Length: 94
Image (cartoon, rainbow, N blue to C red; front, side):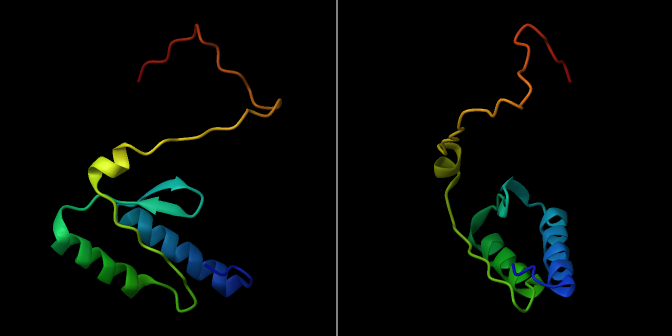
């Protein structure tokens, strides 16, 4: 999404809010995912995305199966020295 002017930033923010309200989760910056059940729901969400896309927006959609999604690998680089280390002896319960 272009964010070079105030109006374009507002349009991008509105689209991001639409994604969040429509059940999308952010995987990483500018990458959102949503689970849908079946081809009919997939087409419905393509239509909804097109209807809410800003006029200068550019979105790429990728279909992956649930099996492909769960086999995704997360690669994490070395933490920066400023990042706080987690105490491995500390236990958190939610």
